[in-house]
Length: 371
Image 1 (cartoon, rainbow, N blue to C red):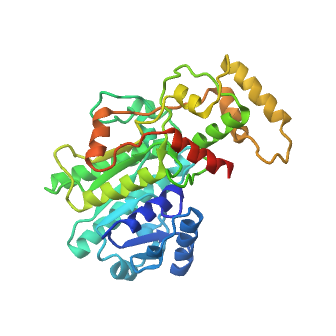
Image 2: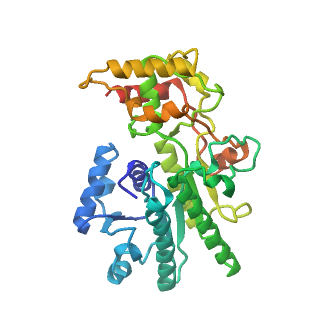
Image 3: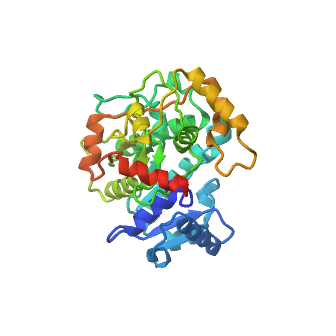
């Protein structure tokens, strides 16, 4: 998963780490050279290319996470993966409109293959291999849990109401827990960890973002319309988790876990929920954006529909809420952050405190949107 938005920044973070390990990326491509080309293009497109990307510290292999052994031959595994001690499994098919059955092979089956690959490497090299699985904070249901020791996963009864992407991550997390239970029964420490990114916003310095994400569509759409909808809870936090914070936390903490430097007293399955509890409440965010609130949701929806109908086909800055209109007619936007104070303190102890969403950060994002 090195060529997507989060994956590219995660790779850049690993390569930038002082005395960091060498990195091997498995990339869907026809050849190793083509795999390296895809990774290089992704790094350059996101503005995070560095000389480390063309050093021996980085190697790219043509493979496919939907195939057994990621499509890597025994010879390639023996020659290129013998020193691997950490597998960060970030690859996923991200589609919130597709049912679980359509995503199962890519999002659950690929994790099974990652665990099997790690087992094979352990058996061949007689050294432990840690698997860090990138899940989603969506498995927590966006529910605030300020006083909980850690953000809880939604109950099984609530899984049917989630979309197929969240369902797949929920099932995959259970697989990770079962794998750790098997390791513990064999007298070994936890070998598998879970990382749950929240609503990933742009880079805190460059503003680089995935403009197609719903969060960014809302921010841009509200600004272009000059009006925002009222929500039942105007104090709900709008999770904004800068991609460089999420990437740095995954790479940094996963490396700690693999190196045995992590505290074990609280970790049957080490789990790190990376939604930003320091994000702004919705009401405060709109104040910072200088966007007024409509008198009612119906009035806001009518204003949006009128603006979209009046928008010319070749508008230089089309409102990105057009693609969300169907969902917005069905229900208001949904925001939220778990905000567990104890978990936020734990992230800070591990060197990755939740970043404050400041006016300066919002200005960085708005400049990027304008570009």
